[in-house]
Image 1 (tube, rainbow, N blue to C red):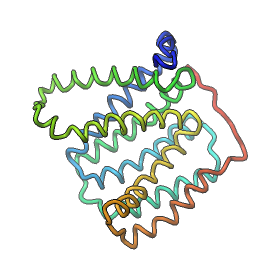
Image 2 (spheres, one colour):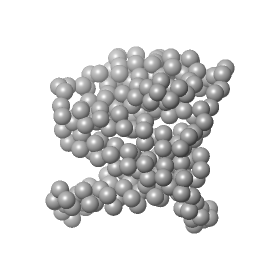
Image 3 (spheres, rainbow, N blue to C red):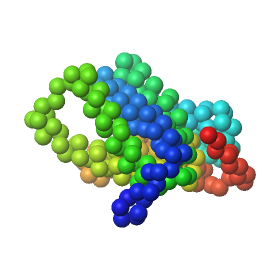
Image 4 (cartoon, helix red, strand yellow):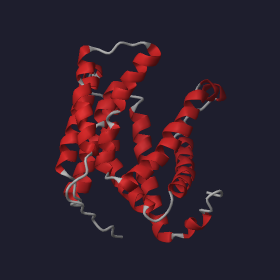
Length: 245
């Protein structure tokens, strides 16, 4: 923010309101539900249930708010979800409390993305992430203190590499890319493109860990490729819904 001279954006009260609401829904509520949920369910279950965010994004932005989405993008999103389900279905096991928590997180995610998208129209991504990170850190520390969660220095040291990866890449750099992405395309399209993650995981698992994919996982390549192609097509009709207070 100092290098780009963005500190003056903190005075934008209209944007600040959207950033605060985005922080509440994404920076605090969403991640608390996800990390709590992962204590009670498997990563496979969490990945499958995570795909419901696409459905909730579609309902919020294109059904409730009447935002236009090209028909090819709808079909592309469906194919992306179908391809991801082929990859993940084999890892799904019994339904757990954690699944409900992650399902709930996906319900609030589109609301938070709406406020983040609106804030990005007024200020830079760095400003949004600065305020969101500071506030969410303070709030989560308060919750940890109230719940009297025990945190040992040894546990932190043992998990330091994973904490750094989460902080710098997953909760840092990737979120800047996400904010810039939903500033340019719809949240539903961005969420659908995100469902390529299981396919990329398989690819790098094969290249780096030499884990050979199953026939079902290889089958998922076709719908994912077609889905990406459809999502990359420009819609004939472009209609932008005005953003209101």
